[in-house]
Structures are given as structure tokens and as C-alpha cells.
Length: 138
Image (cartoon, rainbow, N blue to C red):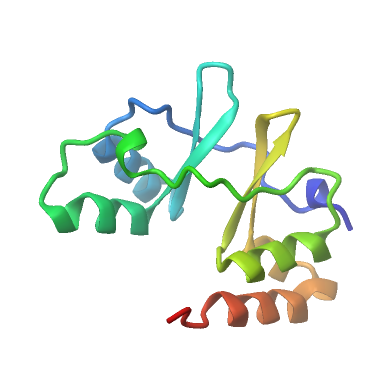
């Protein structure tokens, strides 16, 4: 099965100047833990996770910052034509739970570990990926 068959196609995103308070509100309202960051041409350039907000902003006492100040710029992503097995391996290898889906540089969706777990043939793989993601890298 391809990533395009499992991904969420309607993805909310931020731009580099979006205040983290707006990103956090969007995360709460959508019940998600990450928001991709795109430039003015809808090209994915990073991602802000709830963890990024806490570690790079709140814990430093500086909540008046924008997406560009806290986002993870090393974007690990999937493509729509990537096989779901390969996407699960990317998640496990990089200890991430969500993969932006990029086509021709543009954000077209997002794939979560939960998306993999909803398909019976990937339940074990999702569990294995989650186990690898949850391993301490200390």
C-alpha cells in the first residue's frame, strides 16, 4: 500500500512568521502534535512539534517567538508513492511519529503512526515503529 492511500490530505500548516501561540492553538483545536511549516509557495521547509515549543521556547521563558525560531528544519518526509513499509521504517529510524508527505517540494499530506495502525496489514509494523520511536537515544 502506498502512502497516498493512508495519509491525511487536508493538512493545516504555518509559515515562518506564525507566532507559536497560534501554532499551539491550532494543535489544540485539531488535536495534533505537529504543524508543518511552509514558505509562501507551499514548499515544506520544517515542522513544529509540541516538543519543539516546550524545549525551544517555553522552557527558556520566551513565548514571544515565531515558527522559524522553534521549528525543526531537518525535515524527514515521505512521498505519496512511497510504500507504507518504507514510511514506517523512516519513522522508526528517525524516532518520529508523523511524516509530512511532499510531492514536487510541496506539502500534500501527513502520515502518522496512527494512520499505519488503522490498516490491519500494518498493525505489527506500526507497533514495531512505535517501539523503535519510543526507545531512548541516550
